[in-house]
Amino acid sequence: MSPLILTPNIAGADDFYAELLAVHDGLSKSESDAFNARLLLILANHVGDRGTLAAALEAARDTGAG
Image (tube, rainbow, N blue to C red; front, side):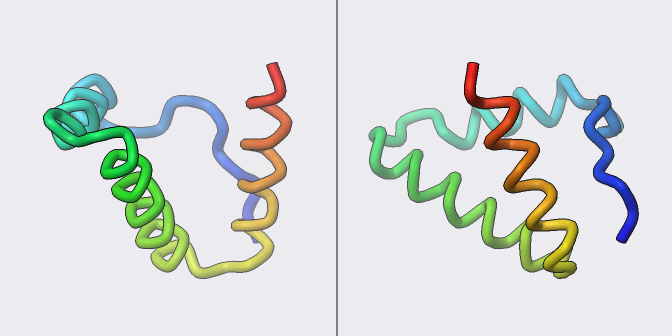
């Protein structure tokens, strides 16, 4: 397993963020939450490596404890 990349690493990150916001436009809170869950599961399936996914869960929990 490679270490997680936690620094900006998306080409056209601002464009991607705008797309992410746009796809939520007009969705209710529950629809938006369901979309986020589907997107997360699709990306997790793409990653596939359980060690990487476990590290990502831990990183998200640690950085979200604010």
